[in-house]
Image (tube, rainbow, N blue to C red):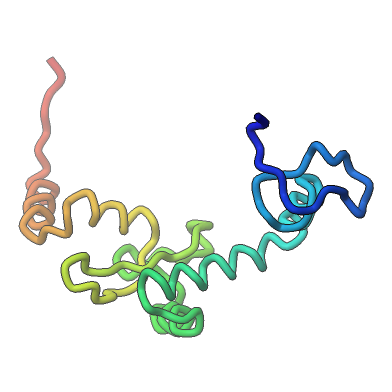
Length: 138
């Protein structure tokens, strides 16, 4: 048994090897599918983002873009522009209520997640940074 499922199409219109049919049922061989995904990378990414925004957060792509414009395309915490960080902004939401709080860079979003969105831990971290503990090397 091959590790790849074969698609319904048994020949490639471009003349590629018929053994190279991939896992997807796209009606294309793996080579044609790969070429399509390379040339339409931005379109595919936008469609995937649009679907995820709607499914996970109930947002349309237009609502996401409006939110980004209201935040001047910057992270709501560190104010880094998404052009500076070379990463797209991500949706930050309250896991308990599902309410969307804003858009963050990946670093800030992960930081909040690592402290479990705890205000007490964040205050403690701020206090720690303000006290400037200096530990001498032994």
